[in-house]
Length: 288
Image (cartoon, rainbow, N blue to C red; front, side):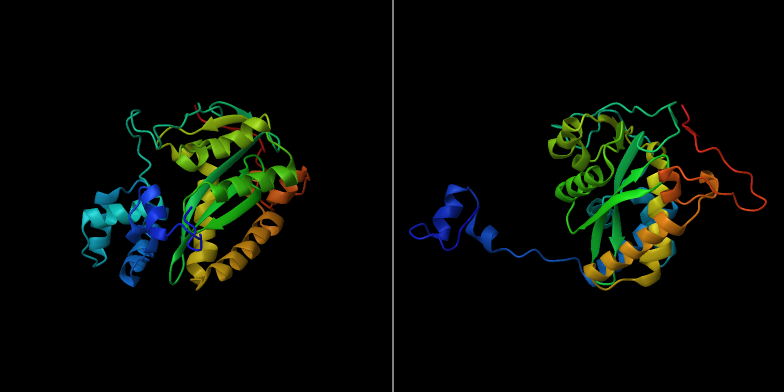
């Protein structure tokens, strides 16, 4: 909001009108140290394996690997990464007090066709000298990744962009499911869903199983792409993810889809299952 070249209104006066200090305007954020980035990668790998680890258990895990770190430091880094243990939290705990939380609509629902339900989630991706956040939109029935975006912040903008791309390319689903993260509960995201006439569904707090398919996607992305290549820059990470998502959608068969790829399942194509493997039904009965 501050315009340094504004004639007749110096920066000091603009800061005063906006009720911020002049030093705040000139402040340049400092990135995480190499030591913290290394810790964040270790935390991410451990959390991918054990998503029930909170800060206290993560401190113990890092200590067994020879890293003596305090709980406050681990808590801060996990918060920066957007990681929260999956155990059920008190119902009074909400991500943002001003945002509406919608009920979970998928419990007991048989999802047996594309575009019946989509889901979205955000994950942290480490690089060799930094990190980015990834959001993906997935069709629940076919597991197809419909759209994705990278961002260096956890603001809602990149989530809205991915949603709008998916809607523009594939139409609209009947139900859209997310967790209760503020990026998804805010009006910028829910407003797009409401305008399109889509039913909004949200997981219970700490209920990672409510969005289990996209959690499995994160594990595959990290072990088969991100950890394997240790990308240097955001552009390298974006190119690597583009190749991996293309391979995942177009060429990777899933046993739960009867040997079909996500693209084939999304289009409704039928192919023979793997030899010796009985085809699974494409219908998904969610546990109550």
